[in-house]
Amino acid sequence: AELTADNRRMLFVPEGFAHGFQTLNDASEVFYQVSEFYTPGAERGARYNDPAFDIAWPLDVTVISEKDANWADFRSGQ
Image (cartoon, rainbow, N blue to C red; front, side):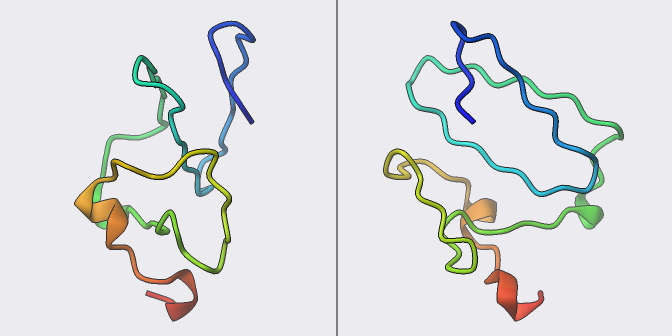
């Protein structure tokens, strides 16, 4: 789903669902709300380029946090 200031769309991600996003321009603003306080020990993740998902990102991935770049392969079960 492409969310823009012009189309004024939003996306609801239910609690417990994985999600990710890519901004398409340098002036992007991201706003999200969560149902609980951040609990580091409870978070899980999937790497943006994990072959299990084969995501075709619209642009090359140029900036990603070290934490997000280092998630294990989804199929490894870790």
